[in-house]
Every structure is written in C-alpha cells, then in structure tokens.
Image (cartoon, rainbow, N blue to C red; front, side, top):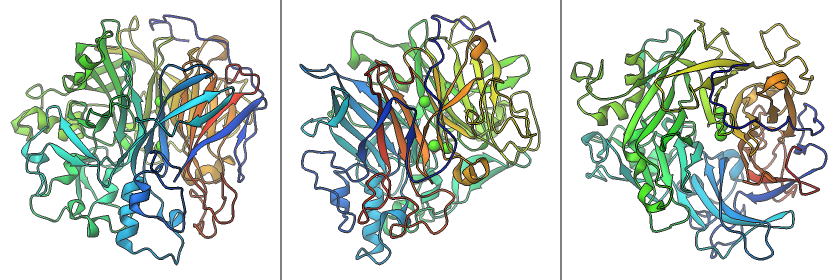
Length: 590
Ligand code: FEO
Ligand code: CA
Ligand code: CA
Ligand code: CA
C-alpha cells in the first residue's frame, strides 16, 4: 500500500455484511439485515402545490412541480433534527436526461411539442426536504425549500471568467449572463457550507448542428473534432430554437458543459453556472477543504481520451459566515492532470501561460474556460479511459478516480495500462502530506476491473469472491468511517458480465486493499447512481436510474422489462431514489 499520503485518521474496518450475488432480475437486492425503502420516484410531488402523478395525463406544468426523470447524483445536506426525529436534511438530486420511450404511452394524446416540454421540465435538479422518524424516511411536503430547477424555465446566472463574453451571447440573451436551464446533470458534489454542485455532462445530445466542444479522436488521440449532436431526445430544437445551432449568432452550446451551484437552504440565491471550473462533459464536482482552508474541487470529463481536472479556490472558506462563500467558486485556478510513471503533475489552465495565447486562439481567460478541453490537450494532459467520479477521502487524505472503460484505447500508458479497456479501473491519487493544492501528487492503481477468473488482466485482492468483482466503476462515495463504496454503469454490457449494476464495498487499506464485495443490486436495465451516506452512516441513499432501459430491446412504457418500483400494471417503471437502512438501526454495511 502507498505510504506518501497524509493520512489523517485510520479508515474503519472492512464492512462485515453478507455479500449478495451477481445476477439480473426485475427487483432490487440488498445485503441481509438491511431494508431498501423507495423514498421518491419520478412524478412524485415535490412542491406543496404539486398534483399527484398520472402517467396517462402528463403535462409540463405538473412536471415542473414533480420529481424529475433519471435521478443521478444525490447529496444530503443536513439540517437539525426536530423533537422525535432521527435525522433531517435536504436531498438534492440530478435528473440527467429523459427516456421518452419509457415515459410516454405509444398512442398517447400528447403532441411532440407537449412531450418535449415535459422532457425539459423533467430534466434538471430537485431539492426536497426529508425527515427520518425511527428507521423510516419521508418527504416534508410543507418545506419552503422544496424546489425544482428545470431545463424548461429555470434561469441560471453565468458567473466567473466567461460571464458576459461575446461567445456566451445568443439572440435571446445578448448579455451573455442568463441561461435557461441546466442539462445532462450527471454527478455532482456539495460544499462545506452546504451548497450543491452539479456537473453538466452530455449536453451535446440536444442540439441541432455540430456542437463546439473540443474533443480528441479516440483512435489517434490527437485530432480535434466538433461533436455531432446525437439527438437522443428528438426534436427539442424544433420547438425551442435556442437549441438550433444553425441560427446566426447562436452560442447556446457554449452555455452548457459547466458546473452549476445551487443553495438549497436559501431560495433567494439564484442558481449559477461557475465558469471558472471550465467547460467540458463534467461528470461531477466533489470537494475537499485543503489544509490551508482553500476549497479544492475535482472533476472528471467523461468521454474517451479526456482528462482529469482540479480547481483550487483563490480564497479560503469562511467557516463562520456562510454568505461570505457565496462566490468563492468564481476565483481560482483550474488545472489538468499529466500522469507519469513517477507521479502526477497539475498543469494550470491560465490565459497567457505556455500555449494558452492568441497564437492558439485564446484571447482571454474566458476562451481558456470555454475551450478547456483544447487547452488541456495543448498543455500535454494525459488522455484517460473516461474519467468519471473523482472522490476525495477526508479520512485517509487520498482521492479515488473512476475510469469507467475505453474499448477504443490503442496506446497504453502508465495510468492507462490496458488496451481496449472494456471493464475500467480505479486509480488512487496521493497528495503529499494530504495537501490537495500541491503541484505534484503520487498515484497508484487500486483495482483493474472485470472478472479475475478470465484472462483479461483484471486485478483485485485475491480474497474477492466470484460476486465481488465488478465492471465499469462510475460513481463512488466515502462513508463516515472513510470506507469506499463503488457504483457501476455498464450500459448494455451487463449481459457480458452477468450482473446488473450495483454497489460494492472496496477496501483501500492494508490486507483488505482491493477487496470488493457486492452490497446492492439494481433492477434490470438500470444504472446505479447517487451513492451518498447520511452523516451518521445509518442511511445510504442510492439512485436507480433508467430501470428497464439498458441492454433490453423493445422495452417501452407499454411493455417494460420491469415495472419497478410500483409493479402496478398501470404504472411504467420509475427512476427512484432509495434509502437503505440497517434493520437494527446501526451503521449501514456493518
Ligand atoms: Fe452520466 Fe458519466 O455518466
Ligand atoms: Ca452515470
Ligand atoms: Ca456513466
Ligand atoms: Ca461521488
């Protein structure tokens, strides 16, 4: 095990739950002695005046008050429990995208324009106050904090270096400061003062015309390209011209791909896009306060051959005055990682430094942030195998980087040891003496994923069982004892591995390093998202995204592969957040 990290406290003992088995069926599975309660589902009322969900009578007006679709990242912002309560807090959730084939009946009454507006209303974020009595959670429907932030109509302010820049202006917003909505919100983070961060990831799917987002050709690793819009959700641009990039002067695509920040505890603070953290396909934005008091944000850029980034704030976090941190994320230095065999070097994305000059079409810091991918490439950053969640562990002082897979890799490197990396791997980063602001880190590979019994170069702790290995690590979290938990997103590859996505405990210390055990399994076709512990470790929130979708052809609203979680013939499958507790009230996982 590595020794250079500034371990502050010992990590707790390896969890002692009885492992569940690989497999795929219509239901969820959790380790014995635990209960998985469905806490909130797509369509459930969020605001006090929201109507009940009726999948056959959907409207954008109703959806704007109801829980959105495809819940991804989950954060829990603690609030003081009241008399008779065990716990209370704000549950903040990303709604990454919509799946119209599973949302709407085939011959329903809605026009395309109405469906598009419902999809936009179902995309974005939710914040809802929740309370635990005994071992059971419920929504506090009376909370004034319960809100939706929708791609359809919520205005986000642009802050930081790109605010107001000509490349941020559109025919509808000549100020370049106000964007309607947030899109493709994948993973996220929260700050020490209780705000919620969300990463805009695959925003290019929604536009008409090539989206300017500098990419690398995964085959050669060198050629820039513009991403062709995939139109996953057809026709948005036909009904909302802001998504039509063929219109003159329409820079709308430059206004997505950012980290957004909301304050779930103060509805008077507008939601903001933080352009100092760069524009890319942000997976998430997990944070840690450095020993000198500055905030550090780690973010992955989830595409093959993209990079790992770190933001270090200019100013220190004010621990006594929450409002003083309101625009902390507008000032600081974004850097990108170069991995060498003997360490990781952080390369700053600062206008005027190195290649980031007018010779390379950078004329201001705004250009560096809007074209962060191109800047990272010119600085010599290391292209990675789809960098997803990047999770600092405040207990052992290290950071865990999920590299989900990259079947197209043709050139191996120190941190990318496998060609045609179908199953992914996890890299551990080691800041010297726990200093997250240092220019150089150590690093090590924690596990190489896939089935260790097959000849594919997988590597786990040899005590890992036939159910303990996993593939496509995507999101992860750290419990209050500093133990690492991994959530997977295999897409349709679950047919190859023989198991649906789920959650695994993964040892990082001593004799348990690299030891994985399966704790939770999602229903068929779902992706496992949002792993998040309550601060007491007695609740583990997980998000079941797009049940019935991945790897199942012909699964629709009318004939889905599962009707989880309702199993009601009149109800389609519903993405939902699940609260896992231990039946004896103890710490989840044991
Ligand atoms: Fe939305 Fe990188 O998964
Ligand atoms: Ca994901
Ligand atoms: Ca993913
Ligand atoms: Ca995480």
